[in-house]
Length: 447
Image 1 (cartoon, rainbow, N blue to C red):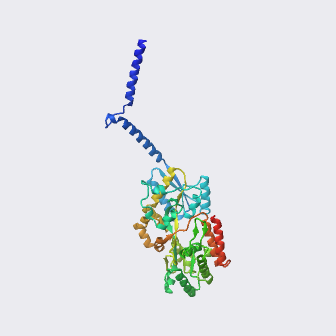
Image 2 (cartoon, one colour):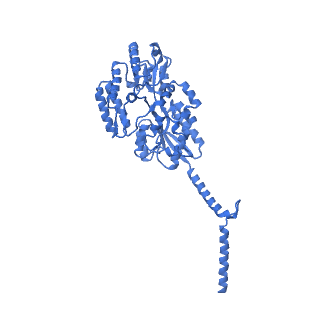
Image 3 (cartoon, one colour):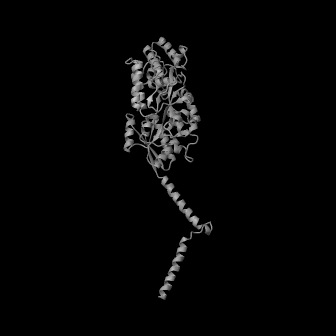
C-alpha cells in the first residue's frame, strides 16, 4: 500500500508540472506577466483573419442589359476595368432581348433565376419595392469606410428627391445619368424668317404659324406627346399624381386648357403628331417639320438625317407658367436582394461606375449628363459639352429638374395620357371627353 501511495504522489506531481508547462505562453518581446493577454489577443486576431477571409470569398455578379453597339461596348469597358481592379469580385454582363424585357425580368427575379443588378428607371422601382425584392443602397452610401462623401450635395436636388421618394431616406435606385428633352430646330429656316428659338410656348406657336405660312408644312411636333402634356400642366401649376390618394390631379382647368392648346394647333396644321415615323428625326431631316422636342441622346440621329441639307441647332424646351419644370429622365441601377457579400459587391461596382473617369466615359458614349457633379466638372466632360450642342441645351435645364411620382400604376397613366392626346388631336373624342376618360382609367390603375 505504501508503495502505491508513493506512486500516486509521483504521478500527481508529474501531471501538475505538465499542466503548468502547457499553460505558459511562448516568451516574446513582452514580459511573462503579459502571457495570458497575448494568448487571448492572438486568438482574436486569428478570428478576425478568418472573418476577413470569409468576407473576401469570390463573388460573381450577373448584370442584365439590353444595350447594343457602342452603348454595349461602353458598359463592357467599365465592367472590364472594374474586374481588373478586383481580387474577389467579378461582374458578368448578359445581353437580353429588348422586347418584353421588364416582364421577363420580373418573372426571373420571382423565380430566383434573375440577375443581381439591372439598369432601369424610377417608374420600375416601385414594382420591385412592393415585393421587397431590391436592396437599399443608403447604408452603403453613408458608411464611414466605404461610403460616398457628399453624395447628396454631388447630385442635383431634384434627382436626390427622386431617388429618396420612397421614404426613410432609402436609396433603392443608384443614379447614373440623365438624358432629357431638348428643342431641335431648323436654324437655316429660322434665320431666314428672322425667328429665334422659342423661350415660351406662346413664342413656339407664333413661330410655327409663321413657318406654316411660309412653307405650308406643320412646324412643330414632339416625339412624346405624353411628356409634352406633363411639361405643359406642371409648368401651368397643376399637380400630376397624388401618391397618398392614388389619383391623378391633371383632370382640371389647367389640364383641359393645355390639351386644347396643343390639339387645337394640330387641327390647324401648325403642329403635327409623329405618326408612323415614331421619332421626328427623319421628318425633321426631310424638312417635313421645322422643329421638334426629342431626347438629347438623339442628336446623332438628327445629324445623320440632316446631313448637309441645312444647319440645325438645339435649345432648351420652352418654359411658360407659374412653375419652372423640366422632367427628369433618370437612369440608374437596382440590385436584387441576395446575400450580404453580393449586395456589398454590387455597391462596390456602382461606386466604381460613379467615379468621374468611368462616369465621363459612359455618359459621353451614351449622349447623357452624369448625375454626379464632379464628373460634369471633369476636363474631359467639359470638352464633350463644347462639342455637343444637345448637351449644351440640356445642362442648363438640370437646375430646374423635377420628377413625377413613381407609384404603382404610374406607367399605365402615361399610356392613358398618350391615348388622350391622340384621340383629341385626331378628333375621335372631344378634349373634355378625352381628359375625363384618361383620368378615370388612370385612377383605376393607380388603386
